[in-house]
Image (cartoon, rainbow, N blue to C red; front, side, top):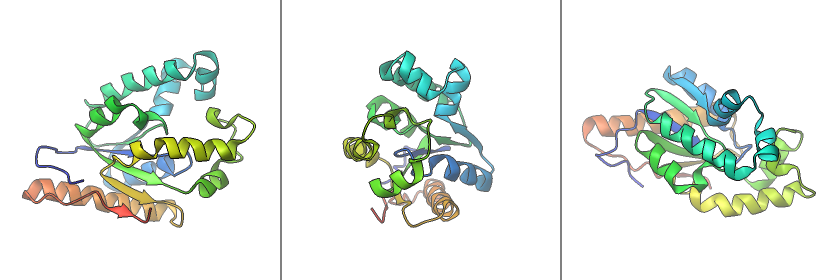
Length: 194
């Protein structure tokens, strides 16, 4: 996928499954680019006064996804922002379409085994509160993969530190910016080790 001459990404959106490094990488990238940093889950929690787990339990996933869509629409007004999204956000086509109007979409990817290793001791992940969280990771990752692959760039985080991934993200964003400024539009659909 190439960033077309009609797209001028002023923001950077990180999509991907839980545990792929979106939050930690996003903060590092924002620092390096001197951008603001926003996490859609944190924004929803601040607005509702509830954790994501509480929202899922009390309101249901559908209600949470509606809040997520509202936040995504509002992000179009932002400039110079690194946006870290919730893992399920890209499963709604309107969310990806909205983000694509103003942001370079970068998917951080990891294997189910690496994701489990990273999230197994975290209690704030509502989708992992079932009897077999490893199986749930595999199922959700398989279901969401087609949505994640719609990103402009896919970066595998399995064997990279957050700092290394952040450097790759910054590099891809600068390539997209340079292409738009010079009329040369780099292919940013780089598949980085998936």
